[in-house]
Amino acid sequence: MKKFLFDLFPLILFFIAYRFADIYVATAVAIAAAVLQILWIKLTGKPIETMHWVNFAVIVFFGGATLWLQNEAFIKWKPTVLYWLFGAVLLISKYLMGRNLMQKLLGEKVSMPDSAWGKLNLSWALFFLAAGGLNLFVAFSGLFSESQWVNFKVFGLMALLIVFVIAQSIWLGKHMQQDEPKEALAAPETKENKS
Image (tube, rainbow, N blue to C red):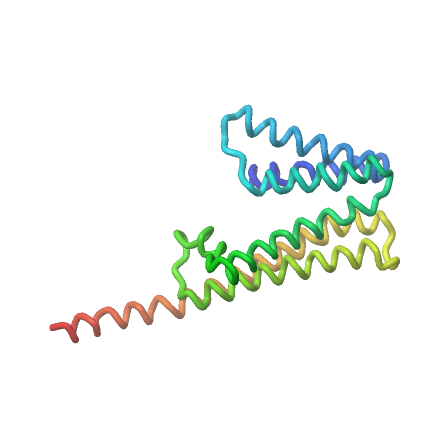
């Protein structure tokens, strides 16, 4: 739980700052929080995860452009760029490089056939691409205010992610329950065939 809140530190401060000021102050606070996050990890001697570096680079670039050009469109693009980057990495690593990143991340904890890992990787990639597209719709369609976009960025995207993770967990649980008995039944038959 501590790690989860720590990862959300820039987002939480962005939301609080927006409630008391405006999008530009909130953006500056988020950039400062991302810098502090990286510094804190360095000072505690822990390794900085790739996710932290990616988030740091995206918030500094798009937040910096927002402040420099006084145009909130850049910070509104930030979640989309981050999500689309994750989706693209999952797709490129699987279909162009032959490496399943979801299997690499979870393979030690979960045992599944390659086809199931392929579906899991694809579903996460599609989720990230869809979430990025949805952010653009809320940010730029003209149907929602800036305040509504901020609420969506902080709570809506988080709620979507939680629902998706729960759905994935249920799918994984069902899949693993179907696979384990088959493996258990197959093992004795193999031994009998050998003898």
